[in-house]
Image 1 (spheres, helix red, strand yellow):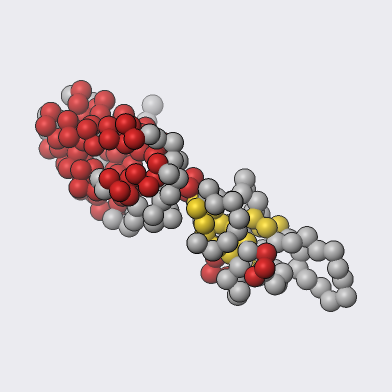
Image 2 (tube, protein in one colour; image 1 turned 60 degrees about the vertical axis):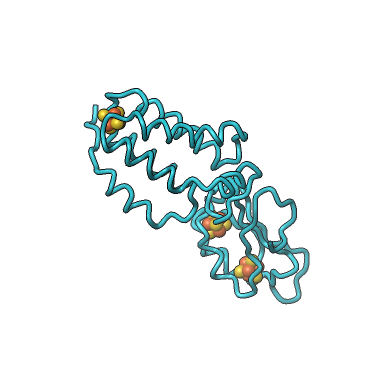
Length: 195
Ligand code: SF4
Ligand code: SF4
Ligand code: SF4
C-alpha cells in the first residue's frame, strides 16, 4: 500500500491559483486535502470534506439541487467552527471565501461562467463558417474531429464535426481554425452557434 502524500494546505492553495471557476477551485482544494493533509482525527473535518467533495463534483456536472448547494456552505461553516486543527479551518475558510452563491447557482442550470467545468461545456464546429481546410485535424490528439478536406473537382464531402464522446475538451483545436469556426459553448445549447 502506498504511503499517504502529506502536503501543506498552503501549497494546495497555491496550486489552485490558476483555476478560474470558484466551484472547480473549491473542489480541487478539497480533493487534494483529502488526498494529503487531512488526517481523519475529527469528524466535522473528515466527514465534511468527503461530503463537500461529492457535492462539488456533482455541482461541476450540473447535477446538484438548491438544498445541496446550500449544504456545501453549511459544511464549510461547521468545519470552521468544529475542526480540531488549523488545516481543517483553513480549508473551510477557503471554501467560504470562494463560495459565490450566484456563480455556484449558475452551475445548477448547467452553466459554468468561466467555461471550465468540462461536463458543462462543449467544443463545436459552426458548419457555415467551416471552409473544410482541415487545419484542425492534426491539432486534435484524440481523433475527435472528423471531416474531409475539400479537394478541387470533387463533391460529396463529410462535413467537419467534433465527436463529443471522443473530445476531452483540451481546447487545442480552438486557436488553429483560421475562420473561427470552432467555438466553445454551454453543453446544454443544442445548436453550434456562438454564445
Ligand atoms: S481538522 Fe485537523 S485534526 Fe481534524 S481531521 Fe482535519 S486535519 Fe485532522
Ligand atoms: S477540444 Fe481537444 S479533444 Fe476536443 S476536438 Fe478540440 S483538440 Fe480534440
Ligand atoms: S480548421 Fe476550422 S475551417 Fe478548417 S476544417 Fe477545421 S473547423 Fe473547418
